[in-house]
Amino acid sequence: MEQKKETWWDALRFGIILLAIIIPFRMFVAQPFIVHGASMDETFHNSDYLIVDELSFLLRDPVRGEVVVFKNPQNESQYFIKRIIGLPGETVTVHNGETSITKGDSTVNINQPYIGSESSKEAYLKLGPNQFFVMGDNRSVSWDSRYWGVLTRDKIKGRAFLRLFPFTQIGYLPGYYQYKN
Image (tube, rainbow, N blue to C red; front, side, top):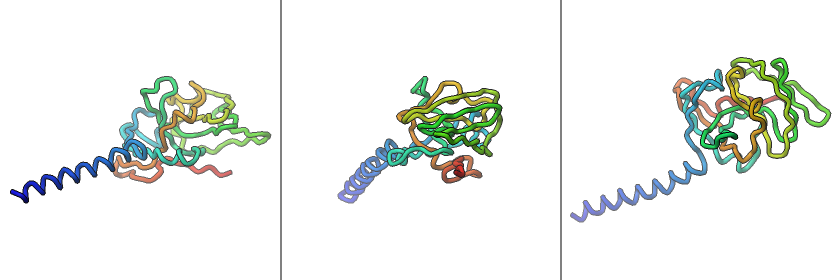
């Protein structure tokens, strides 16, 4: 009888320790995210299963080219996934399918090999402190900064850290594109 009681107590203790580790990890370090919609095609597709890193942006700012998950600025109960294009202090211009970034006296057209489709939607936006410009890779169907304006830093939940599904595309930092300076 003593053996059964000890086994039950060990299982309970193991469960408590497991919850003490998993719950904080899930709340503060990483969250699962399932892609809905086509705004990030060809990079991500509907039902891709991602793990979102929530810790990195507590230690540093997002960089151009990272794919981020954030609260919809117009409905905070929804989450979106888009790519960081413009950074604080920059001016972003989208014109005739070209995206250019101006900072100070320097303007550069950015290379975007990840684009799934183009759009005729144009934009011109000056970014202030803690403001970002984001766009989906499938520009013709993406509802992004070109429509609703800047994304403030406080709305960003984290970056796409791992793609776990589909299994044929498992990968670390999926979709990240490092721009050349």
